[in-house]
Length: 307
Image (cartoon, rainbow, N blue to C red; front, side, top):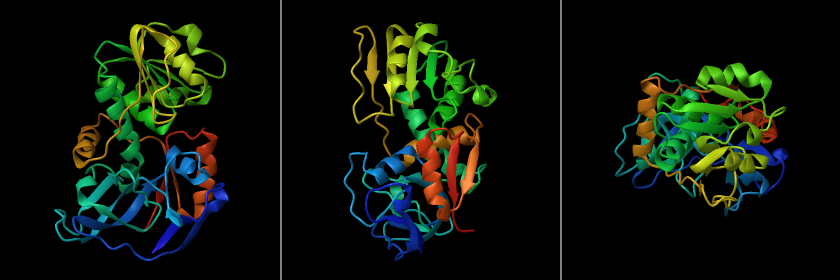
């Protein structure tokens, strides 16, 4: 099969499209013919060596995908031909490829109303948004939330979900993305290139930071006493709060079929829809990483793989 492989840490040019052996599913696993795989910030952080994870070279990146079950290993509960999507379990990657062997327990049936490219675009992004807003921040109707980086993949899903939950949604975005984030459900948009959320807010019940950097301090400043903030852009731990009257949280984004089924339910009922998608081929992996690392992609970058 074809796969995008890295043989060492490095820049985007470390990504090489080459022929590798097809994976063989073990007990409880299935072989999935990948139709689409998304690009996430974690991918280029692993590639560059800036994410503290241990990998063996050669290594195939990619954490979420959509495809069709090709071979069912012994003990699996999915049949060949089943359309599925998934986020790889901790310790496994490999979606930048034509095929992947994965434990069937992490696979969910693809939302019926989405194409493979659309399903791949929401996998990890929707899972992260769902766990962050519902399970970590426990966002409630009538609350006010600041979502940093509204035009990004995770934040775009979070805006839709927060709107559905009945929250008042404030987000940050460049001027050219204001119409886009409003279409997702944002009530108020702050142009972070001209305005500082720290000086405009202070009455938010919750904040969700998908960006990091200067946004960390801004997120804390946006909260009213008793508020809580969730952070996904930094390390494995939440940043230390500079205030003793607010809570800093780091969402524990698990992997399971049950969690993906929650995403599917929201997708099939129209609560969340795919973000704006830029579709590319595996041969364009280096360019995709350059765009992702620049942090100005609206929505998601998705590799279209196979038929």
